[in-house]
Amino acid sequence: LSSISAMLRNEKRDEDGQGDKMQDKGERKASGGRKRGVPNYQDEEDVELAKIFSQIKPQTARAWKTVVDLYERWCTMTGKPIRDERSVRNRIAKLNQATKVLSDPSTAPTHVRSLHIFDRSARAKRLFNTRDGRMLNIAVDHGIFNDGRFLAGIESMSDVLKILVQLHPNSIQLSPGQAHLLLTASQAAGCPVPALILRCDVSNVYTAKFPCLPFCELQNENIIEEAIRLDAAGVICTLLKLPEDAPGAVEIHKQTVRNVCTLRNSCTKWNMPLIVEVLAVKWNENKDSFVLETDMSITAPLARLACELGGDILKCDPPVNIQDVKTILHVCQPSQVLLRGSDKGDEEGMIEDARKFIEMGAAGLVYGRSIIHHADPAVFTRQILKAIHGD
Image 1 (cartoon, helix red, strand yellow):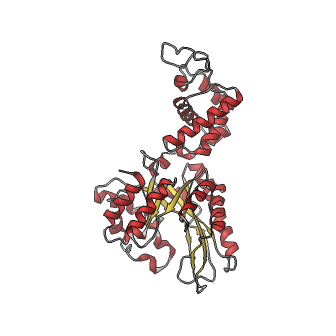
Image 2: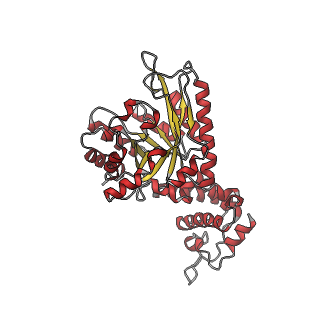
Image 3: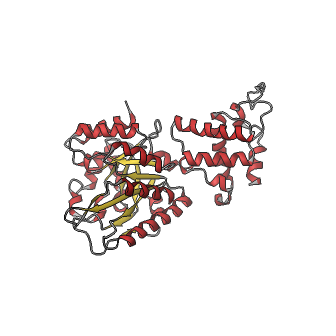
């Protein structure tokens, strides 16, 4: 801690302080540097700033204002000098930069390492639109779940991806065996390469008939290294909850919890954003397969569990009552939340729901077959993008 603090304090010019507010409103130095009388950041200030930043995970101007407001409140309570937004942003950037001078970044102080991945990782920044911090993710990893129903429209992944990259989504979700096609499809179409989100697990619970021995396993123990090799900007796994009377319900829940914890450890090591798909299901009328669980008393705690286990981003199914979106977003803080796009039959209803989800605070939307099976994917996707990112 002392080595990093000393390095930061001994710089000839502390750019962090250029915008510091002076409680006594002293004059700014003629050189344009930090105001006279405002000291450098101390260790306890860095700790608190890192804590607030990790909780809020700012991606927008409003979120940054929240960070500054909370930090200013703490400074007022503790008698520390108040800093403005420019100073706070610069200080966080410098704390991140400080870890790079160490041969082993894991030896950095805890508060430095705790700074959230969205500020440290170039990968994470590729997932979201840089202007508004939102995302459209198109998921086409359905083939990994070993059910013929999911293959309709994605039989030829090369052809599918050539179409999808031309729609300019922020990210495309693929399994390891198909991920290499994303680059070649983008090159063939002459389009920028969307960010890759790599599916890390495989399960048999999505089949038309419920299996006798359900499972959900990570594809291999080195899946994060595989994600890095494929230039993924994020990875995704599922946190499952089956009906209590389903065979293997407890075991498969334990498996998926272990999967999230295992990936969290590797993702932290490699600065890889971890997306956790929160999925609760219930029996259908015939009690031979599953449908989505809509009871908020089940889905909200499961989403919170994904947050508690360390998911950077959570993918959740939208609740039946659209106002319950606020509950999901609230219990998942500080994780970002992506909502699966509405699958209402009418297109206008789907677009309107997309707009409402974003207005209520969702970080983005995930679509799959709604786009793939659409009569005109380009027109529909443009409408979704407008709902997410505006004009």
